Amino acid sequence: MASRTVCRTCAAQRTASRAQQIGAIATLSATWAVHYGARQRRGYAQATSSAPHDSAGQTLPKGQGMHEQRKAAAEARLRSVLQILGFTAAALGIGTLFWVKEQQNQPSRNPGGLYPDRFTPLLVTLNQLCTSSLQSEVGDSHHRHLELALGPESTPLLPEQTRDDGLEIFSIYIKQPDIQIERAYTPLYAPRDATSSGKIDLLVKKYENGEMGKYIHSRLIGQPLEARGWLKTWDAGWHPYEIDHIYFLVAGTGITPAYQLINSVLSNRPSSSTRFTLFYSAPQPASFLLLPELEQLREANPDRLRVELWAEDASSLKAHRLGVWPTIARELRGMVVREGRIALPDLRKRLCRTEPGSVVLVCGPDGFVSAIAGPLSRDGQSQGPLQGYLADLGSSPYQVHKL
Image (cartoon, rainbow, N blue to C red; front, side):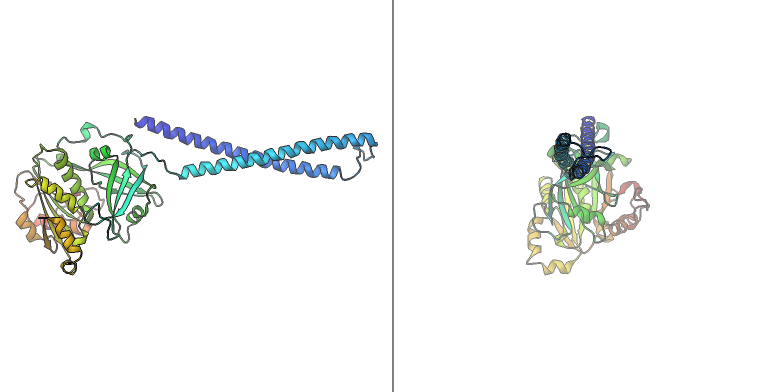
């Protein structure tokens, strides 16, 4: 299927290239015809402005002179026809060039495919502000929910690239073509769910000095984003034991990989026995994302999912007690909310580091990850040394993974 897509793309590119060549040739030919016709007309006007002469400059007899004039008039009419044809060809050539340019600027209305080895344009079908719910129409302008149309002609994940138990996390890369940089983003739903729905859901935060966030936030519905994927971010097979309990320590948009994995396992694999505990930190109550979706999963799986929340700004929580806070409190419906940041005493009370088969996944801003588990390496690829709160608790490096 992918090869046929490539062939169709190449054919379209060849057609556009031929159209450009034809348009350029037609324009050059028309310009030459107009110029030639104008020069011949000036010559005819000079030739008929006085009595006809022969090549030696002698005045021709009247009959012969009339014959030469009629011949010159016929040639003039022919040149006029050539001029008209030249103008027509010029118009067609210029029109062809403009049409080709316009077609190149217009993205395809067919959903694009996703491939791991190259970027392809995926059309934006939704771009809206979001707070604690994807369905909310009120937002803080920092986070946006985007949907990208995903065509069926993507490169499928091979059986050996996926796990039957669903204990894996996938990301895609988005490119900013103007400055040629790419960043990894974790969709809300796993590849199988995204393929079934025909769309990729993203939650993207815009940082003050972040070029990618600004670029993605600015994309309008119908405009493309260049993406490639799917690329695996985490796999349970990377740990040397069978996993039965996963702890997530997340902040900000670090909730997206947690939600992808939890939703994929709890919604699609009812026979799985894996349990999840989510510790989620945000600056203020209004900054929590996906609360209704998480609560729905928690209510459907009370024995397998526990969620606890930390709101850093207690003054903001009190100031909005009659505004934002009551709304969020109703959405929580049993999820515990604590004031302040996730700290070492909180983890010492709640994190069973000696529990067999447990693993801790950490995701969030650099400062959050460093405090919890130490910074990632400078190359951004390797894990770096285990430090922070988890090291103080005596966790082993093979128990912890920084996303």
